Image (tube, rainbow, N blue to C red; front, top):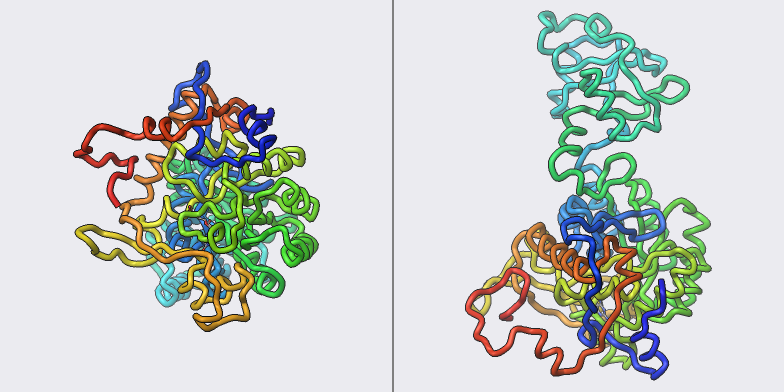
Length: 501
Ligand code: 5GP
């Protein structure tokens, strides 16, 4: 990333800036908003189709929101105010949602009867009809599908009499796209994958794969096996390893060491230990706001950096502890260091409107993490409440008094795991309500639309180009007033401009 004139100058003067202090300059454009590419990364090996990540907060990211966000191209990070088993279950829900690759397909044996299989289907409630057939040595010898059951006039027949012998197979490394083409060409409903010894190691089913490949499935953020991507938050020391064992079993894509002060010895030691135990797992670490902290974390093995100390809408750290750095300067300082290692930056917190997304990216972020901008949607945990004539949903800081009282993870995030009573806790966040926002897909449509328009104005065809080309003007209070609608009574609420609270 080239140096940004305004941010360099303000650093030299000892001034840190944030979103509302600046706006992006326009630039010569050859690209239209609809044609820009939004693909980017959350961590070294975990890609995104839109640069939006949901925050691991208990009023924001459970399995339901993570599924919807991944379907829209982003990624959700499941919060850790849950016991490890429940958190892993939520990850599993996301990973199994699309059924791209069935990793452990239910198989039948060649010497079983059709009646045996129908009875098992009824008992276990299987809703599918394709079963690979094995011999008693466990080798794949055939396949039975819906037609075989439908046209079978004698349930006492053995599976070996009805199965298709020598079924179409593919190697273990077959991707979902390749499987789709193979099944379409050969008009087959299922495609078992086998290893070098002939053992079945997975299966694609045509109807599932077609559902994923068609329609808006091209926007889904999926792993190499066609499963939605998902992240999960972990703590430090023992908490991290208890969770990791379960999360890795459920094929979590990335974990986030979720702390308020990422540049600290427990975080660095935990990070090094995780990378030793799970070298193939991506680990995003935070939160930090200083370039030197980023260097320490990356040298200790971080695959992604979460930047933000005090910008959050529910956050009181800067007021209670007097610490933190305005977010734009924090992102820029961290990105300069991370870029020299090729590690992505996630700008976490403080975004209020869609216009803050291109600003965060132009300052150096590869993606943004949102709490309040996603809170209040249908997919977040919790019920809507009716208050002062409109609908709301609750949204609270993980360092709020209620979150800390309820959960050790929240206390640990703010280094108070051994305190319990209300009188012993020092909150760094607040509890509140945000307006009910409706469906996540509608909200994301507006955020992504705003980002696309921003990129069009700057003349940036990709996230990387926005990082390179985006230049800022510092604005004054008068400029800020001018930026918002003024001298008018707004009579109709716009879907992307909050007017009433
Ligand atoms: P928002 O998008 O609402 O502006 O900010 C969300 C971010 O604020 C989270 O991703 C997290 O980094 C941070 N955060 C969440 N809860 C708290 C809290 O109670 N105190 C502080 N200091 N930060 C919080």
